Amino acid sequence: MMKRILVIPILAALVAIPCEAGRPRKKSPKAGKTKDNIYTDSKYGLSLELPGGWWTKIQKDEKQCRLILEQKSYDVSTTMSQYRDKFGPPTARIWMVEMPFASSELVDSLLSETYESDIKTELLYNLDEPTSTLQADEYKTTNRTTVKLDTSFAVVWQGTVKYTFGTIRVRDVKLSGGIIAVEHGDRLLVVVAQGYPKSFDHSFGQITHMIRSLKWE
Image (cartoon, rainbow, N blue to C red):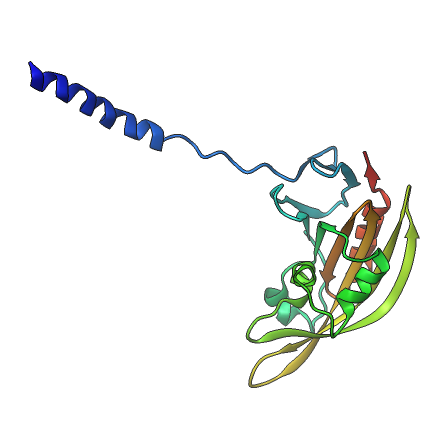
């Protein structure tokens, strides 16, 4: 009789194990959602009218990078086509970061050859693209302006990024880049974009138009 009493709890425990293991893991919440081509951020209460012709990748809510856009169709010159696999499609990353500087000073710090910080490394991820054979080593400004928004303003920088490519046969490759910074309270909305010179004016124009649609709750 005693043996039967001991066996029952053991069997019950064995049956319970797969039930616990089979429970699905709770997914991390997304940074926001899109509806009718409008992105709304769940934490910061911002909304943006998304440009047509771009893939939208909403990031996890725990990340400072809230949204990544990748252009679906774009033109590449014959010279640059050989680097298409290396650099990928034109992209724009939208960030919300604690404000270390005012918007204009932040742009200056990102372009500085001497200033270094963790936030700079993160923000310039898709411009710097450091690898063993590829390194961004020069930023050149082609245009810098201030754009009036609904309740604030945006500092907009556009230029070229020179990359040193290769280890034995060293070549210089130039891509286009853009940075937009908007102050909001103690934070900055920062957009960092990269693309190919032939079509970047159009691509970055779409991103700038998106920022003009910026609204805060």
